[in-house]
Length: 588
Image (cartoon, rainbow, N blue to C red; front, side, top):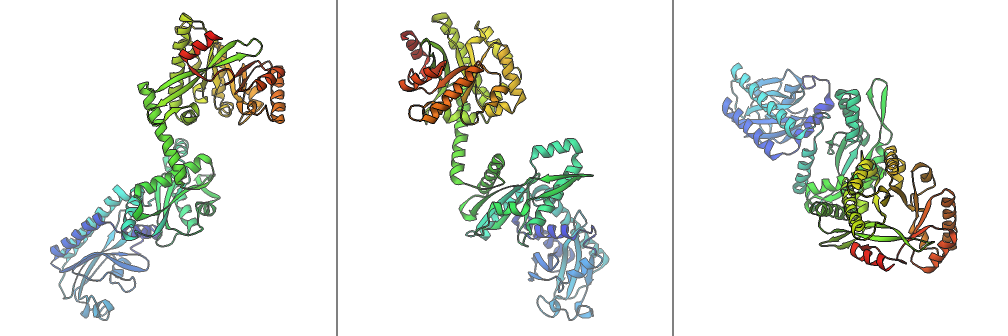
């Protein structure tokens, strides 16, 4: 068949389906081509037909009122099934067509000349035709003109698709096409409920890594395979279209169906495998994010944002499938705004300040150190505590900027106290990301040396304990800090992610027992047993033990009995600004 020179009818039908979709700008240009054909050849009627496996569709026309017909009935079928051209100067004088339904009935075709529209891949998408209700002579020069115009049409369509709406690797409609189609839904189906489904099969960093190892061509072939596998597994209806959203990521718009969820899509796509190279098959980990929408109620870009948000969250949580949640998204947006404000606060050095909470020796009752705690007077949100923004910052590079800000302010304060009062050790909270920074320990030691301060007067308290144990780089960073003379503390021991293996894996000096255990000691026998056992174990391992969150004399008395070394909490003092902590220390 002339319309399948590549032997890939499936690709031809995909291209036909894309061309059949409405596109005002593109179709306006096609209308100009049919007008030009009629004018150049002196024939009153002209049209462009698009032909799939069952039907012929008149895409644009001039003085020709047929909109569609079955493929078998169409005259254009003879063009694409033949040698790519057909001229009938008088249908009534041609035995093949004199009794044809389109000749005897509407649109009463008496003259017909058509040539195939063949795209850059050699796939015949349809025809460019001129026609009339009167017979015409049609010479070879006119036929060549019609062929030239057809080549112009296909060149335009190839350029249009290449530049804007087709993914070059998978040959699927791309993200701009998805956005355009969603915008058109607001016109064609404004009140109907739909679902936008995003399917992630291979993350972009992994694709880049595969490209480094195997080259670009095998990875592009892999992406084409995945596109075909996803399309086949989904068993898409004729009206459904799979889009290439990003490398290894696909999109699908479907009418809303009660009971069908993102998990339903995962169930269909599980156990996907694809061949990367000879004897190398990879398992495809699929994640699905979706959102539901009524197109007249929401902008297409917002719909896509919601689906992307759901997809990224399900990847982050490694949960396979997730539907967009407005309440969660609102919290996430608020988190983003807080981080944006924090970046500005650090840049302008506005609103952030430090408070210091004493650490008291249980044996002597003397203050043996302070913990520096970040505070933020937000211009709109008011007073913010570390729990309001530090857990968000540790997920970003902003935590390193914040850590440096705290360290620099503590060093300035230590230098001031050394000159005007007395030097007292201060500890700062540091994240796994900071420990993993190249040269962090050496840089911190250099800062202390430049300020003429002993490194032993700067304590380092570990945040994100579970991440530290998973990072040899972070553990090496902690060992470097100890080598430089800094005192290392483990925070929140005894609850959450803390476990005894930390004691073997992380180089430590001080263990801080979590306040959630300490707070329950007065009224909970189990908590007392746990705290006593923890302290006993840590003392036998020669750690300094500090109890956080001490608020009552009863708790203080129990901790003394258990042999705890230091305490910290509101029983002695809440965190205080530098000026107030100086006054507090003088009183004590």
